[in-house]
Length: 241
Image (cartoon, rainbow, N blue to C red; front, top):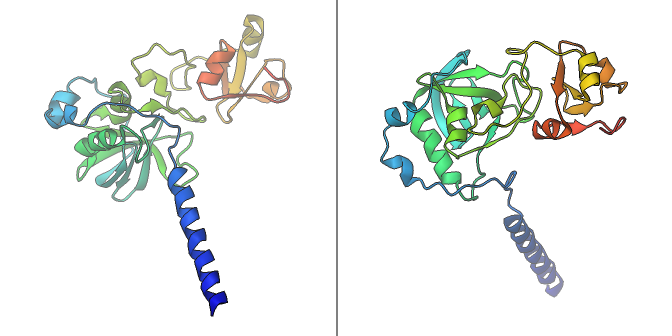
């Protein structure tokens, strides 16, 4: 009898230890946070906020009623499923600023019809969520979150969208297929630039054997190593740029 009680006690203690560890190591994502208070938006009408922004050049490919807002960058859309705002990242639940970012997204999405410009380069993330620009009243909500300071840039190539275009900062970035005439590998080599592929997250010296395999269609040119890293690319392990 005493043996059974001892086993039960050990099991209960183990469970408590696991719960304590889980609480301490709660997922915080990238650690991004902000101190914008929710009350900043409670007194502002939707139209007064929307009027600060230009109409987006993104195109609505799918649309539906937003039935649930998970957090600032993730929603459910009727007929589409779970949607992740492409190119941006808001604070995770429990992290400072998460409630404000969520409230802002709820203000424009919850129980309302939203438009989606699905990322043509990568339709879904590894969790099966649709990656998209969320469009409300003709405005890019991803861009609004960034410019309000409620989100950070999270650029994960390949993607048809360059979120640095949506920020208030003059952040150097490469251009997309939609907007650029591509540079040749020879000009990259002569300028000492680095090259990457729209279909991977590695960058190379132009002389690298793997860099030479990148087709002109998918080639991305960086003017510096720092620019490539800021865009979410990692150095090739072969040529070590």
